[in-house]
Length: 373
Length: 139
Image (cartoon, rainbow over the protein chains, first blue to last red):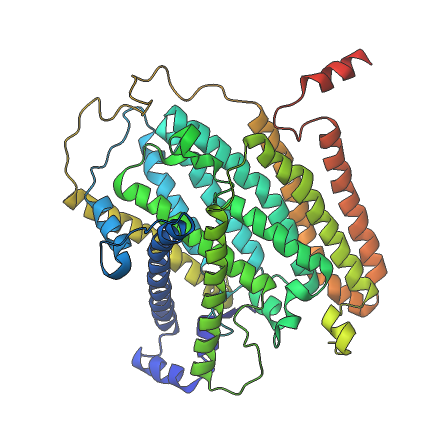
């Protein structure tokens, strides 16, 4: 059975108290808990997405020796709120040639696809909304909606820049899905399961138990995943779908106001999700780095803080990469994906399988320090 | 559908619902706040200030189609590998590791042959080299 937030909470006494408060209606209580938690997560994510735009501008300014936003609030930290208000007060323009229904649908699909991935993200060992036994598989599948929305946005606008950006975006996102999926496959093979709970249960304790240090192939797989994930989220150096010097701004050229805002928000949240997945798969997730006895609530909160800190550190690296490397050409993009990353990822998968058979599933740490499952 | 299954899917439905709600909320707020001065010129598709020529829904590069085709093949094959990968260590613990590895490797070999074929045919190059097809025709 899948572990969910509600089934986790139902182990404790206060769940029965709450249940009495809701007149013993299990479904109503479950919906309420999920809704409150989902609202909290969405609020957190909107803040992370908003602060992400601020961080992006501030870090880029730092890298290019500028000052960056510094007018709104202390150190310009309220800049993202000002941007949001500005986007709300912009006129909503739609090209008269556009496919109206699809034009409305595209940003919504991006948002739906990104929010749906939040359901399986393991914030801590207990606070995971639905620890589906196909967790990572579900995540790959549902995040493809973003690719669909990129293409729909480009197609529905009926503008040449948008169409080119949408086509490039779609081909890039689906191409890079292959190395990413195969890298995730090698971790699935090591963990023996697709659920995040299963994957994280192998990575407890000191960082040496993380999957990135499990064997050399998993170590390479992390970087293949990282590069592929950058491309899947349309981040520089892979931001060809919105390359401003050649395509104006790609698939969202015709989007104004809040609908553009939704695309931007979805993109920044997706970067966080991708970082979170990397943390959960390779970097030990929210597991505490040492064995310590804590009560339930402090333990879960500590795990949540660790998970989010690790994900934000990766987020910083993503921004850092964006402002350090020049953009690729389309043919280089395809060459890297199909001629380098995909063969390397397949090699890693075979390597992980052989490692599992030869060393009986033990990691380097187990072999060196004589531990083992 | 049993309640346990429903329990796992409920948060997903709720999150999707929240996304739609957020979208409509933002849209509604912008309808209230934003100015509305539509004009024909304003709603022409952007083409760097020129009047747009023709529709954007025209023929596009066939390379995108080939990329999509290669993707479908690889995606389906990686989907088929997921169940094997998730029970691989279990099989290994039971002593069937070598057998599982053989099956797994033979499946991956098919994938590798596929990518090698595409590579040889020049379908992995974005700009498919004209020389490749010339060489083949001359053989």
